[in-house]
Length: 114
Length: 114
Image (cartoon, rainbow over all chains, first blue to last red; front, side):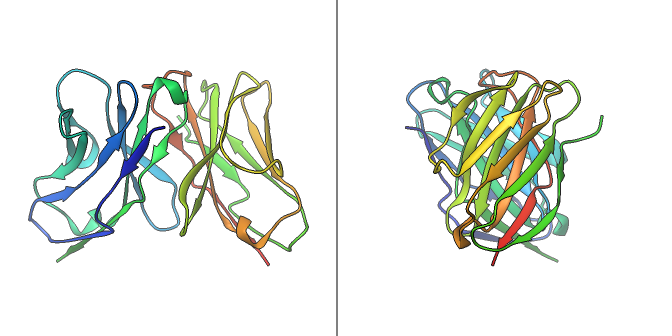
C-alpha cells in the first residue's frame, strides 16, 4: 500500500528566508509525486509533480521540489518565502497499483512572518 | 478554461437525511475523483469515475455513492447522514486516466451535519 508522511505539522519561516516542506513516501512501484497548496476555504491548487527524469522539478509560484529515490523523499522548497505563501501544503503519491487514486500526507501548515 | 466547479459550496443537513453534491470537471476532462477532507482523517479518496464507470473506490461505507454522466459531470450522494460525515468534499478532474496525470481540484462543498 502506498503512503506519504509529512513529519512537520507546521513550519515557521521569516519572509525572504528559504522555505522547505518535507515529504517522504512509500510505494511498491515507481512513484508519481505531487505537491498541492490549500488556502483557507479553497480547494487544492496544483504546484508541481515528479514523473521521471530530472530529480529537481520546478513548479508554480517559484516552488521547486527535489526527488531523492534513495531517501524516498520529495521535499518542497522555495528560495525566498513570501507572506502570501502562508497556507497548508500537501504532498501526494500515486502508483500504478492504486490506479488514479492520490494518497495524501497529513499536510504541513506554513506560516511566513513579515 | 474554466476550472472545476462544485455546487453547492455550503450545505447544512441533519442526521438521517441524504445529500447530493455536484461536480463539473474542466472542459474535456473525462476522469472525476472525489475526496473527503476532515481535520481528523485528512484527505481520503472516495471514488473515481471515468467515462461513466466507477474505476476505483476508497474505504467508505456503501452510504457513499456516486455517478458520472455522459458529459463527464459527476454527482456524489451520501445517504443516512451521520455527524461524522461533516467534512469538505473535494472533486478533482483530469484529462486522462493515467497515473502521472495531474488532478485539478474544485473549491469543495463544505457539509455540516447537525
